Length: 441
Image (cartoon, rainbow, N blue to C red; front, side):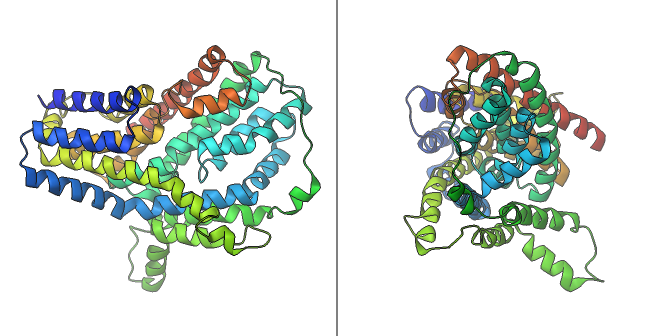
């Protein structure tokens, strides 16, 4: 019955989102309440589960999501993202456009949403592709897959952050493992783009040369990199020094511990964002400016994350999760369980973020039963979930349409290149994680 409850709940969430077009927040909330009633919970416990699930989840992770989105908005609007892109191009060379675009996507998507990142970089990609005499199919797929790799696996992207919060995983470990898994998946993405996607010729079409006055308003490379690098370094540094005794360096460890807290680290990253515009104005940080728009964009993610927390708490308090854990505890699925569950949800409803949050909410109450108790185990479950959330992007995913429509691809070509490509990178990330999991166990 426990397995049946879980399957019916997930099926209901997917049905409400895909067929009835109900918002993921309402879908998760309504299914959570019905699950509580059907499983025999009393009404007081249902209300408590809603309050604790929503408030507890956002209390841990809400501010981190908001600050990550704000940092991405500043990089996008100030031109800092394009500065980073141009620097990578100068290193890789103008002829290796696919390799450059994959690396650019990998880096840009850490703070910037993959949809926004592709729109932001599409013009640059077309220009470079035309100049190099290449097919747009290869370079666009490299960019799209590069963006996808870090979008699903590397905080402070909202999906991995939310999953880490729900599973109570160490964010520094998640970052470290995510960067490795996403990096190896990126290699597979570039190989796929060069060896398979590039064989389909798509003309980039006419291009527009950039005007010098646009370039003069952009920040320098150093300033553009700081809002990304500083928070990552601080969070990873805190995790790396967690096991070191504070007896010899009490003040230093205290400072690192405070600055490495995800909220503080990203707040410091936001402070460096204020250096990005050529001239910082009140409009940029106003309700209608960059900050206001970023807060609006983060609202949906916060609501879905909170609703995912409700779903997880309802599973936990109804004891459905405990029964399911006992059933699966002796299975040989292991670390592949979150991967397969996330892949099923992603393929069915389209959103990697929703797949990450929903899967984390289902898995969280089962962690003890499945034997995932150490900090490393928790971080690996987050990465397995992220890898599953890549498999696969197709017509129910907004990113599928962004990539295909901005790259002159028809739906058939999109399935053959973009959809297959997401299967490749998701499977590669999971294979990488499985090797790491085997080493640590």
